[in-house]
Length: 144
Image (tube, rainbow, N blue to C red; front, side, top):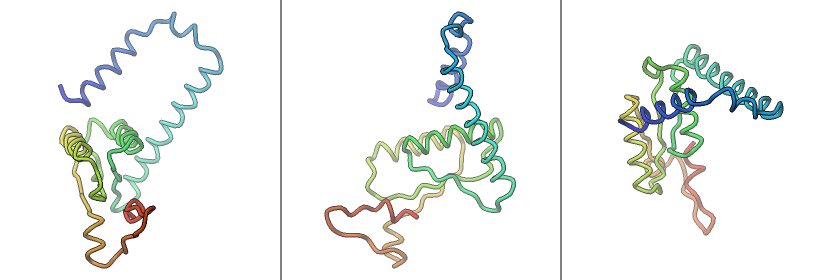
């Protein structure tokens, strides 16, 4: 069982195991937060579908970090069981841990998504961007 299938199975099991007794412990503030979160999720899914329908060449940027993983999960909710209507794009700073790249590749493979990888070093070599130097230098800003 791959990690995505396992996560879905865990989500379904939690939903099935929650009893009405669990719900009685939710106070109105918690219910409000949950409903607000559900609204935010549905709004994000709506925007993703709108982008897929209206834009000619969208991509979903994917760094492998927590924010990217959440967006990828939202995209999965928006378009599954069909294929993603746009590719994922990773801008490689070449400063990632090998485990991040392995995770990225495994996740993309499990989803059957198309991955585009661009390189900050390639942009530096072509003169499109200038690498920062000094103790506070970072390649993160060069990913744009």
